[in-house]
Structures are given as C-alpha cells and as structure tokens.
Image 1 (cartoon, rainbow, N blue to C red):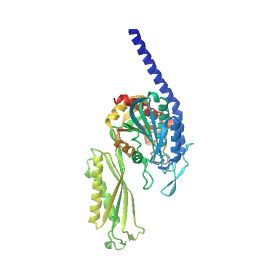
Image 2 (cartoon, rainbow, N blue to C red; image 1 turned 90 degrees about the vertical axis):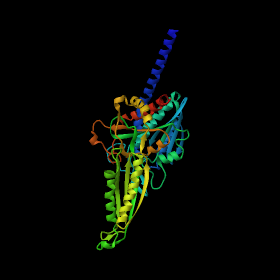
Image 3 (tube, rainbow, N blue to C red; image 1 turned 180 degrees about the horizontal axis):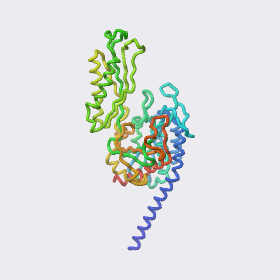
Image 4 (spheres, helix red, strand yellow; image 1 turned 90 degrees about the horizontal axis):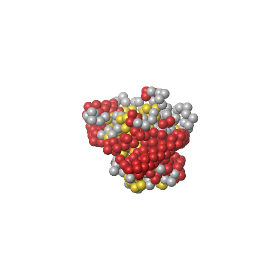
Length: 428
C-alpha cells in the first residue's frame, strides 16, 4: 500500500512538473510573436473609436485560436474562452487606441499614419504604449487557448477602444464597453489591467493597493462681463481681470483649503481665451482645465469649491461665471484583497519578489477605473525603460519622442496568464 501511495505521489509530481515545463515552453515560443505584434500595431496606429483595422486583426486572431468574439463599443473586441473546468470569470483588459501625435525617432517601425480628429487631418502615434498592451494580451490569449483544458473557469478578453477619450461628443471607452455588456455576458468576477511604463525598470512590475491613479475631471469656466473700449476700462466689466483673479484663487484650494496629507490633488488651468483685439475689453472669457484627485470625496469637495470661488469672484466684480465640470475618469482603485491574493502570481511572472515593487499613487488617469465599479479590479504597471538609459533620460508618455524597450513584454503576457491560472485557487 505504501509503495502504491508513493508511486502515485511521484506520478503526480512528474505530471505537475511536465505541465509547468509545457507552459514555460509555450510562453517562450510566444514572446517573439508578442514583440512582432507590438511593432506591427506601433506602425499602424488608429485613433479612438476609429480602430477599425486594429479591431479586425485582433478579432481574426482570437477566432483563429477558437475564442468566441463579439464587437462592442464601436471598435472594441470582447473574446470569451471557456476553460475545461467550472470556475470563476476573470477579465483581462488592453486598450487599443493611439494619439494625435507625430512620432519623432528613427525606429524602423515608426508610425507615419494619419487620421482625422475633430475635422482635421492629424498624425497618429502609439505614444502611450497601447500597442504593447494589445500584443501582451494577444500573447496571453493564444497561450491560454492552448491550455484551456487546464483553466478553471472562463477568461474574458477586453480589447477596449478610446481609452484616451472618444472624439467630440461621441460615447466610447470603458463606459461604453460596460454599457454594452462587456462585463455581463458572462458576468465577470475580477478585472485585471496592465499599463506599460517608459520610466519603470525593464521587466519589473509596479503596483499599489487602493487608490492608484487619479480621477480626471475637465472643467470650463465662462466669465461674462461688459464690453468696452480699452481706453475706458471703467465702462466695462472686465472678464479678463476677473478670470485672472479666479485662476489665482483656484490654486488656493489645494494649497490652503484641503488636507493634502490624506491624498494629493491638482487643479490646472491649461487654456484661456478671450477677445479679438488689444484695444477692446471683451464681453467674455473662457477658461478650461483639469482636476486630478485620488479620493472620491475630495473630488466632490473640490468641484464644490471651484464653483463657489468662480461664481463669487465674478459676482464681486459685477460679472457672472458659469462652471461646467465633466468627469472623464474615476479614481483607479485597486481592490486590496484582490491585490494581496494576486501578488504571488505577479512574482512568478516577473521572476521573483524582488521584481514586483510597491510605488506611490500617480496623478495620471485611466478609464480602467470604471471597470472597478462592476467587479474587484487590479491595475498595475510593467517597466520598459532600457537599462542603457537613466530614469532622467526616459521619454514621457504622450510625447513625440516616446520610446520603449520591448524585449521584456513577456512579463506582461506571463502576468496575464498566471493571474488567470491562479485566480480560482486563490479565491475559494
């Protein structure tokens, strides 16, 4: 009996080791494909809600691997892979849109693409790394399709358009994906997402539980006064001077009115327009800006304070102010329980605990945040800065010079695969 028991144990260990070897081999074989896909998508970027060719290529690949697909949110692709065993539903997300930026580098696969944005022909570039997100998720999808009998549960692949914001007044991005049922059929139990980092050490993973990335609000303040000749300012109600007072006062919200030890916040006026001639005090001035917060209650409080300051200062000057605030994203919140249960998976993917590092919150924003309203979510970064350059030399996201080292995109692919394989046993 004892011999039979030990023989069974040895057989199980051998089978387990064989399965691990097989998975490792699949991941190694997939890595060159991931890099090749990344370079293809980088050379052929498309703007938000216009990712028609990108979407077709993604859908064709998923279908080739036996993954059921459907189109949502104009150009989004949802793939569903049912595992060989019953279990939970895990969603993996990649955004697929480029930006209206002209690429400036000497890459052989640099973009020369053009697109139309708000009626204008513009250059298009993957200046935020969404091309790497597509390719890492495609790599994970192909690997998982080859081992689907070992998967406990179902995997939903979310290839999402318009993360950078849909054009004009169009709907798009994560809110439209959700609205059209991307997380409901089947109903998702958890959502994971990755963002590449041009400043992060190559192949390392960075994360933070709870608030990770800021909410993003865009605001417009329209000040109306009374027009007059520039030589007779006493006959005017000057919206330019009033706007200057409002801009200065808005900065006191962060510096004097809220407790920034609980969470950081930013209020930026990035655009102001008024008048047509130097010698005419205009009737109207319009300011536009952005608000970044890492606490939802603070976000509401700042909205209230902006409206109060703008309207009261305008009133004190005999003018009126109209304030419109449009929420683009929520705070990207990483469910702490999901994070804790997922760290071991990320450590396997990155080659050890020393390669999975906690970081501070970020004031950039992500519409991945909306998925967290439907299911526990976890969003993390993968570093792609070449070891040949320092952090100070790393290029900025959204810049024409944006540059990545794509040699370790396997880390993101491995992370997606490992998270799926481990989720069921970590959430019994």
